[in-house]
Length: 337
Image (cartoon, rainbow, N blue to C red; front, side):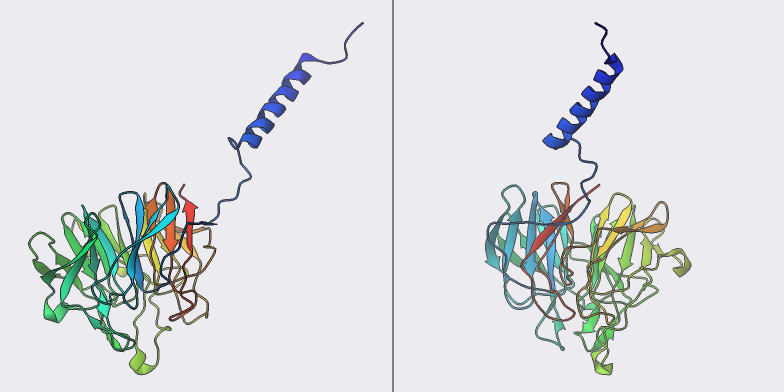
């Protein structure tokens, strides 16, 4: 008796079954959306905003914020939060910079809104010892908070910031700080003054991106966002002309920033355009010189940070609306491509 089944049919069915099996095992999942995941963690951090995130030894460190808060450490391997020592004083509006085994809290302020004051000395956290230390003095005339900070070629660079809390005093300043010697050097001003933002280094260039010129004295705290980035080239030790710098598609302050490969990531923030904190994540490709949209966060937030750990982009805590609340305890992550 002649069979009506062609061998190619069996081959096609077999391939389909094999692919279906791979889908079932999670090996192939072409339809899985690229999106943020709110992590179901054991425990939770102290709610806060105007804090900073740092990645060290594969863990996420949440440091500072308004009031005196413990350092909360998230371990991606166990999905557990652990509370460590509190800050020695109220420390907020700084960007954390990791150098070796030390986390420097650069551009910190202390005190209550709107007249917060910048710190007189550099403060650092030593995660191995779970200990804070006050280090070198900051030059009196260059003290400010809400600035961007990066580490490059052995020095920490502090850009922008504000000298008088939220009242006024936004600056275009750029300074270098040698964490070994304590020496400070005044460098050329950026093209734009800005505060309440974060800076990153990508391909030997500093990107000051996002932020605003806070002016509570003129009753304009949120509205004066700075949409154009400033870019400092460490090879020439000079700022690029403004026409060679990108404009942020969604202007906001209080934003998070991080470098991933050749891309500068900008997420979250607050602005005068909306009450809720921004959830947009936008990426500037420094090679192709163009912006792209990344998945929006599950919860808009500002006053926190972006860090990479275990192949994921993490953010946590922050404020869910423009201004000081609600303060969040959630942590979410996005798989990095």
